[in-house]
Structure formats: structure tokens, C-alpha cells
Length: 339
Image 1 (cartoon, rainbow, N blue to C red):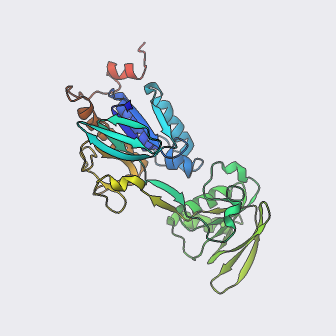
Image 2 (image 1 turned 120 degrees about the vertical axis):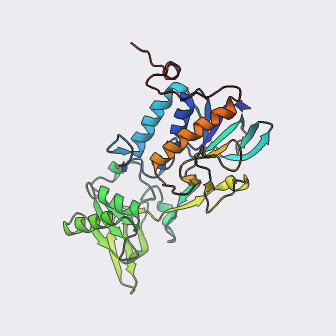
Image 3 (image 1 turned 45 degrees about the vertical axis):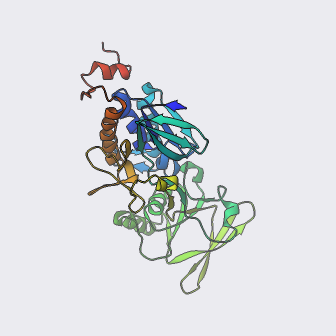
């Protein structure tokens, strides 16, 4: 059994920042994530895609953001339990007994759920035979855009991910963007951008088309697409990328009695506690009036949840708010030596 002040469920950016905020006030956290790597959706879906709305960072990638957050929590020597999913939680006196699918048991007065949108998997091509090309010629996320340099790429989808990657990959590859409707679902500025790039001859747009067949043995050599009238076009391609969104699965969370609303967990905005004392929800998984699904919002939520955790983890101590610039105890925890 592992005893800790807080069990954080989710190793994405919001969960990592919560670990930082907990560490600053002297609380120990253990982190569980069902992915095989740290970083959550940032690493799984867009490690190399630019992010533009992190405070003080004009531009960063999902990977660089994750690495910086890991560097920030290094002084706290946090343990990560990856490829592991919390299955059951039971209240025992003033603690939560938490059991994972690997039968690991944690005992903690606090749980912070920072699980993003829960477990997720991409919506895939329904075309028969497509699965044999997965992770060779067909991909639903991009780990390293340089793998597609000077290649022919067919991108399917009309949302933000499809548009963003069409724009980004057009800088280094021959891109054809295919969507089943004439109108794109992504933000207007991105839709306008891909149309500009088409006029400049930097990518091709095929609408309204859907994938019809795949040709190739070990790897894809070409595909055919079909429009609403039955017209078929053949496209020579090396890779096919599908961005049709994600299938969200909350998993065992639905059995924890957290008053779920539309696959999110309602919280109060004072400390982001759920209807269960000692269980907090932050990031995309939580909901409240005026909620913005932004990483920076999750950072704010994590900071307040961490302070509320202190009261349950240290019931006999009074929490004193301190600034990192002046607090010697905080600087000691960070290993900062004043000159």
C-alpha cells in the first residue's frame, strides 16, 4: 500500500501543474495515468503541433510544454504509475482507498482527477482492410512531423486538427485535404488559410469526398475517393491521416457517484471539489458555469484544488499563503539557494 497526501489521476499538463502546486505547499503526490507516457493529450495527439495560448510562451509544442512542466516538478521527486487505471475508490475513515487495475493500492485523504476527457481513442476509417495499414501508412495522430517530409499525404477531416495539420505539413510535404462536406468545421481563420494555400498551389482540397478504397501491399501506394454523385478520383499517396475526433470513455469514473453531467464532473469554483469531500476535478473533465476548456484554466483550477487538499492532508496545521519570491520554506522545497 502506498500512502500519500494526494493521488493525482492524469499526467497531462494540468495534472503536472497540480503536482507542482502541491509540492510548493509541502504535499506529496503520486500520479496515475492509463497512457504509457507522461503528457496526456498533448503528447498523444499533438506533441509537435504549436500551442499559442500558454502565458509567457508565445509558442510551444505539446512535447516542450510537457518537458518544461516535468523540469518544474523535478525537485519533488514524483512517482508516476503509467499504463495504469484507477478502478475503485472506497472511503475509509478520513482517507480514500484507491485500487488500480494492476491491484496497486493507494491511501490518500485527497484525490485530484485531472484526467482530461477520460480515456480516449481516435475515430477510425470504417473502410474494410484499413486496419492492416495502421501505424505504417495510416495514422490518427502525429508524433513527429519530420517523418512526412517530402512525402505525399492525404489528410481526412474538416475540424481543427485536420486543418491545422494540413497547414503545418504543407510546409514540408505534398498535402491533399479531403472532407466529406464543402464547409469545414474548424475555426474560420484556419479554413481561410487552407483555401489561401490551395490558391498558392501549396496544397490541394477535395470536397465533398470520402475515402472509397486503398491500394497497396505492405504500405499504401494510392487511394480512391468518391463524391456524393458517385464520381471517383484516384490519389497517389504515401500516407493517410485521419482526424475525425475522439471517442471519449470515462471508464470506472462513472461508478464513483460524482453526479456526472454530459461526461463531465460538476465542481464548485471555490476549490474545485466535487460532491465528495476530498475528491477534486480539474481540467477538461470538470464543469462549472463559465468553464473554458483551456490549459491555462486548468492551471488555475489546480492551484486552488491544491490549497484545499492541504486542509485535509494537514488538518492540525494552518495553511499560510506565501509567495515563492519571498518564502524560504517554498524555496527550500524547490532547492533554491539564495546568494
